[in-house]
Image (cartoon, rainbow, N blue to C red):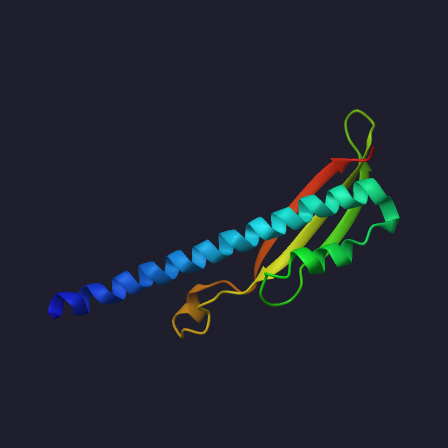
Length: 120
């Protein structure tokens, strides 16, 4: 009984941490995918692209507020026109309501992905 009482908190903390990191990685991959698909959409369709619609469709599995987007046009080293799409998302921790976790976890924890593509 004593061994379980000593080991159980450490095992629970390890389990909760694994779930939280897995969810954060899944959220980052979603943000990265939205950035990549958004850059591809804007590169193909220009100002007529429905980037907010794409973001709401693809980011539907993210918890909390919708991601924010920024579109930047420029040129690369060879003189080709490029478009960069930046997606920022304030990640919501799953276990943020646990009292001691609110002192440890940063708020907000922003996930950011930037994709630059050449405009054909």
